[in-house]
Amino acid sequence: MTATPAQPYSPLTLLRRVPRLRPRRGSAAGRAPQPDAAPREAHRNIPGREPRPGVPAPTGRATRAARDTLTLVALPLLVALALPVSFAGGGTRRWFGGRAESQRAEAQAAKDAAAAAFYELDTAQRDLRISIETITAVDDSPAARRAVTDFEALGRRIDEASGRYINAVDAHDLDRDDLEAAAANRARTELSAAKDQLGQVKQELDRFESGLGPLLGKAETQLARLAPAVERARQALLAASNALDAVRSSGLRADDLAARLAALGPELTKLNQGAGQHGVPQTLERATQVAREAEAIRAQADQLPERAAEIDHRLVSLRTRAQALTTRAGQVDPVLSELRRRFSAACWQDLQQVPQQAGENVRQAELKLKEAQAARDAQRWPDATSLLSTVRALLNTTDEAVSAAGDRLRRLNAVQKDPQQEIDRTRFAIRDAQRLAMTGRTTPDPRHARPLDEAVARLDQAITTLEGRHPDYWHFLTETEEVRQSVARVVTQIREERGTASH
Image 1 (tube, rainbow, N blue to C red):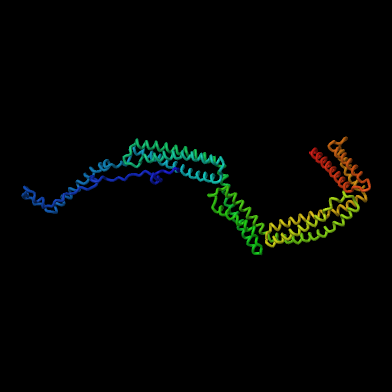
Image 2 (image 1 turned 180 degrees about the vertical axis):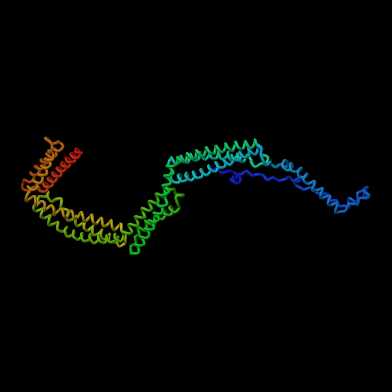
C-alpha cells in the first residue's frame, strides 16, 4: 500500500477558501424601497375629501415631485437600518476577528504540514520500492530476502500512519462556515499527531534505505553488466554466422559448426525475452556462455581453410612415411640374422617379432589413411583428424621397433669390441657421486652411501657376465644402464637436500 489518500488533496484544494459576503434574499439591503405609485386619480376619488376653498387642487406634476422628494429623504434611513442585518444575519461569517478564525488558520497550517509529510513519505516509499525490486531481481541471498521482509514490515507501518492522516483529513472540514473554535482545535491536534507519526516512519524508512547500500550497489553493478553482456553475445553470434557464410562461399560445408551455431538459437531467444522472465544472474551466465561458444565457432570457422590444408599435407606426409617404413621393415630380417649368428639368444630373442609386427602396423596405417582421406573428402574434419592421429601412432611404434633392431646390433658390436669403455663410463658416474656425497663431510650419509655401494657391487657383477665363451652383452649393457640411473637418482637427492638446507 502506498501512502496515497482516499481523496485528492492538492495544494490548491488544501488552501482555505474565504467565503464571499452576500446579502440574504429578502433583506432590506437586497432591495430598494418602492415609492408609492398610486395615480392621482385615486387621490381625487377619496370619499369625504373636498378641495379646500381658495387652495387649488394639485396637478399631476406637483404630485410626482412631492413623491420623489419623499423617496430621496427616506432612502438613506432604510439603507442604514438594513446594513446591520446584512452583516449579522443570514449565516455568513464576519470579516474580521474572532477566536474561531484564529483556530481555523492554525488547523489549516497543521493540515498543510501533514499533507507535505504525507507526500514526502509516499515519494520515499516509491523510490525505495524501486531499490527493493532491483535487489530482488538480482540477488537471492539471505540478506536480500531479509531486506524484502523488513521492507514489508515498514510498509505496514506506513499504511498505519497514512491511514491515520487520511482519517484526520476526512474527519474535519475546515471550510465550514460554522466551524467552532473547539472543533478547529481538535482538528489541529489530530493533524499534528498524524504529521509527527508520518515523520517518524519517514526516519525509519531513511535508516532502512541507508542500510541497503551494499546490496543495492551489488545489484546495480550486475544490472550495469547485463546489457553489455547480452549485446556481446548477440555480436558474437552475428560474427560466427558471418564467418560460416564466408567459409561456405569457399566451398567448405562446415556442417558441424553450423549445427553448433543452430543449437545456440534457443539461448538467443531466452536472451531476447529478457532478465525479467529468466532472472538477472541466469541471464548474465547465459550471455557469457553464448558469447564464449559463438566466439569458438567463429574462430574455428576462420581456421577451417587452414585446417583443411593442414589435413591434406598430413595425408601426403604420412603416406610417404608409411612407404619408407615398409622399406625399412624389410631390412629387419638381415639384422636379426646377423644377431643370431654372432650373439647369444638373450641378445636378440625379444626382437624376433619385429618384422611381422612392423608389416602389420604398416598395413593398418595404410587402411586408416584411406579412411582419413574419405573423411577429408566428406569434410568430416574431426574424423579425419582422429584417423590421422591413429596413423601417426602406428607409424611411430613401427619406427621404434625397426630402429631398435639396428640400434641393438650397433651397441652389441661396440661393447663386444671394447667393453672397457662401458665399464669406465659407469665407474666415473659412481665416483663422481661419491665425491659429491663426501663434500663437506668426514663420513658419508648412510642414505647416500648404501645405494652407491650397491651400484659398485652391481657393476662388478655385470663385469663377470662378460666371461665365458658366449657372454651376454645385452645383459651387461642393460645392467650398466640401470646402475648409472640409480647413481643419478642419488646425485639428485643430495643436491635437493643441500639446496633446501641452504634456504
